[in-house]
Every structure is written in structure tokens, then in C-alpha cells.
Image 1 (cartoon, rainbow, N blue to C red):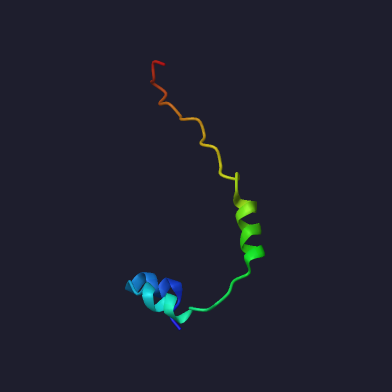
Image 2 (spheres, rainbow, N blue to C red; image 1 turned 30 degrees about the horizontal axis):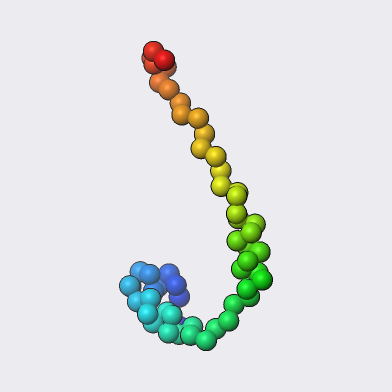
Length: 55
């Protein structure tokens, strides 16, 4: 069975997908993961200025 990494490296995603056709994931776990990640992006830090900046 081809791993996702191998499929990406060789450009053979079709084989990767075909080997996993019919697999069923854990929808609740997937949704819980998405919910835990939602709104958790880090805010951009303030830009730093060079010491000789006139601003």
C-alpha cells in the first residue's frame, strides 16, 4: 500500500485514493479536530523597525 507521502512524491495520488476506496473515517473525531482548530490561528506580531528609522 502506498503512503500519502510516497504518493505525493511520485505524483500518484490516484493509486493512493484507489487503495483506500470504501474506507470510512471517524466523522465525529474529524469534526472535533476541526472545531478545536477553528479560531486558533496566531495573530501576526507587530512589525519591527530598523534602529535608524525616522518614524
